[in-house]
Amino acid sequence: MDKLAKQLREDAERIECTVSAELDKRIQASLLATEPEAAKPRGRESRRAWFWWASSLTGVAAAVVMIAIVNLQAPDAVPEASAPTAAPLVLPSIRWHAETAVLTSPLQEEIDDLQSDLRKAEEAVKQDIDRLF
Amino acid sequence: MSNQAALIEAARGGSATAFADLVRDYRDGLLRFLLTRASSYADAEDALQDTLINAYRYLHSYDSRWRFSTWLYRIAINNVSRMRPVDTVELGDLRDEKSDPLAHCIAASDRENLWRYASRTLSDEVYAAMWLRYVEDMSVNDIAAVLERSVSWTKINLMRGRQALSEGLGNNATDDKSTAYG
Image (cartoon, rainbow over the protein chains, first blue to last red):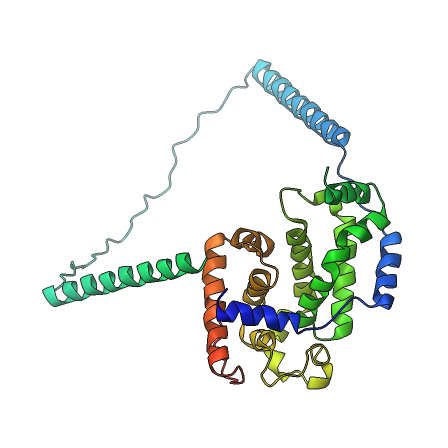
């Protein structure tokens, strides 16, 4: 145990407190007035699943009947649709001028150095954490 | 079946006495933790009472793969965070000595109790992580479960907490300059 851990433990022990007789009575009375909730019964879940299946099947059956009714009816004569007259949408052309950034050699070196530093720092932190815990 | 498992089973069946026996060993530790987090002694006692009642009420949701203390602390920490609005956390060092619940519980010493220093400098979660680690001897995995955080988050913040407190220890724990993390 290191110095800090030892001191933390000692300082926690220096906090002197115990549950008083009055608080104990209060807790006992509250517990007696409380009912623990029971775990959800399985029966209710199975009833819910059964209800879900029944309503799904009813819905599917209703949909099938509706599709059958619609398809079995004689189709009415459909008037010939006129050709759509919407004007073609013309988008203005936009010229984007973008140039590829060219990194100069010193910048690239600096990035490499920074990445290397970052890797070293990560390693150091990982080592510290592994050592402690 | 262990004694604890038997008590849990009896309490689940509605025995308040079994539950009282079950939590008897954890009550003082929980109260001590809650005292360091609450704004008054009465609030800490209320929080302990709420924690135990919630634990009794929802005992069916306790998973025996966890340590019972881990589960209790999880409820206690949730209670404390509900009790203390987030925007009052930063005002910790403005508390006056009379309302400080720790003022009467800490034996006189020539140096400041590190947990008081921690209370001022660490965030609620980091403080809780440090307490669970160094007072309750919980594993990092258990602490992560209590705080509902990842194991990596827990390790990193424990380390930050240690750094912040080490600085406090080095400065005789009286420097008001905060090095809060988390």
